[in-house]
Length: 285
Image (cartoon, rainbow, N blue to C red; front, side):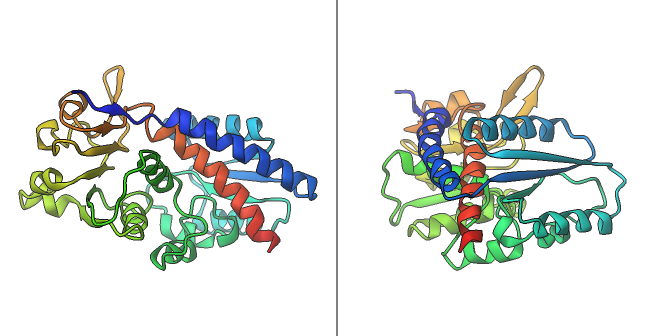
């Protein structure tokens, strides 16, 4: 039997209904929400995400500012821009669009963002709260993954979870967030693959999360029968958008699987909106 599709769209719609009510309550209390996006240079994928942010802000009644900076801006000038946005009381949330131009220290720039306005959850302070098990603003894609898994009603206690990919914004925070639910988490990366052990870790996973950025890197035949597969990868192959998992083969073995596109993506920008509202509450405190 083919796996049930885990689609992010319907979950996003339900969450936005609650977010609409949250914005109405804050507006009634005199709070004006504003998300400021900073884009350095031009990047097609980043431009798509910017349009999604703008559309979602309009739907929820959140003001949106896009600060477009030249690709050759100096690190000090970018840091100054982020610092001024952080000091501006009219700005609720700040998102620094990635990737930055080659040679720019991404972590240094993320560290400049005011933690209470860091709606991507990438500052050292917010990363630390995730480690402590008390996340306030966590990375949006990681939150989307956890929301998708939770939508199935699965009890993660003791379950074998394999996360493939150890990035700061997906793999690591997903692993930590699921550890807090007492899942047994393994995080795999290039070292795992080079030892020839990736298929073994994938095969034992009751829940598999993949965020690598390489089409078909996870073979469908590796997937455990009855597993849940959350594919975060978005890759263009010819005129198609595909994930990191061989979808058709994996669908025949899994119990649940996210489509690409249509799985994690629609929820990621919704989590950004949720974080923007959470940031406003945090600042009021």
